[in-house]
Length: 403
Image 1 (cartoon, rainbow, N blue to C red):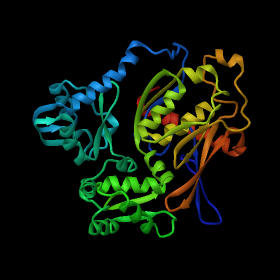
Image 2: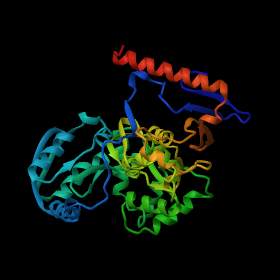
Image 3: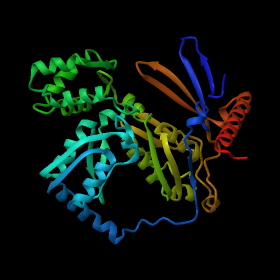
Image 4: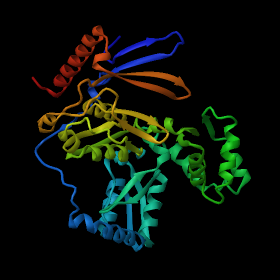
């Protein structure tokens, strides 16, 4: 037993890991600072503003701007500087979020040798720049945002050049109409699924996709079978959607939201992690008005799975990870918040918050997780948890130079 929690081995040889929902002890030197909770300094309004009504027009304008020709010539420039200069040259607001930039092979230090657009549609020029890095763009209401391709999200780390080269090879394939390329694709795939004869199922689904690229065909075929795929080293890993979702949640993300509706915070987490987020109807009824409407979250370079755990601990909501993404729900036995709770000036996380998590590996990259409430934690481990948290807080204070 150590500062990370409690480890034990059951009669089947499976290692069960109990993690405290609090401060991670593993590496204080690389600890990330984050806060979450609710505040009462402002109110939330759902009334549509003139600016919001005009956003639809802004979206159309951005789409047109992406199809307009551009002339840009850049050499030996960092990726983020290249994006900034292209935006300045074209007048189109283009942003690359810090967590996406961090996923480039050398992070912020990634250098682009040459960017050349000569009367080239801006959209095509951006794709020629970003595709070799496993990136693309999406159009939002007020900006064009650089995004990481889904097949790299699940790495939880920057892709290597080897992995990006493999992605480029797959993009050039047409396995739905080329039998030789389909067979070549087969040699690259490792299945992590219990399906009977998975290759026969996947090959049939790819052929049904027709003349799409290898990336498009793999994505459509896997989606139809309830699977997902990602690149990991020199191979393509095909597994169940819930495994892909869990791998995506290992990636560090940055979220800065203050005094916002809780549903917006949950959706922001899903967007950053590229995971669908749903809330079971009626799940917020037991939460105070302040938690529902004025929630704050500051997380800088924190794994999405840690943010998810702390959101559950702070709100008292339960969550389940499955093929369709994350589902938040209200655990049984939690009663609706009282009228007095609506006027509270502090977070109301529930009468019995989560304080620990048990992870039981099931093999083939799968695991099951159980969140433990305070009342369910044995008395002897409650003291252990408090001691571990005290040590973590002391280490952070020492690192930051606090008295």
